Image (cartoon, rainbow, N blue to C red):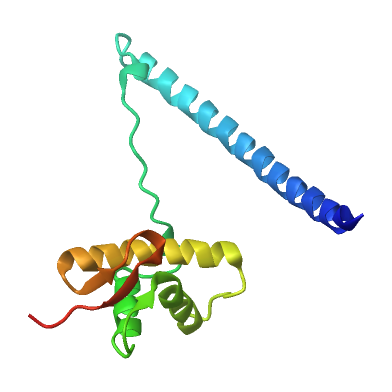
Length: 148
């Protein structure tokens, strides 16, 4: 049967994901324990307080701080677009940036993450008028905006 080579890959992927789930459950347990301890301290220090009434703070994931310094990604995107003849897709811009930073271009997840970060940076640059987009969604192509 032709699917025999697929099964071991699926089993390995399942094992990997299951490991992630177990680790996340452990982290969740630690966070819940910490939260219970903080709630207990609040109740001791202010007996009438209801810790459950405190709203959750929204977390903003700044994943790119692991890979890029402040404003570096936008600058690298502009540096990639300046010499380009015509427009470039975000994925090509991301790959150029990854090669310049000597990142693992063969890592699919990292490529997808950097591409998403590049799209975010390009959208911010477009709002400022530094770049223009032609096309929509993932098929969009980007270029330096014409001088005013």
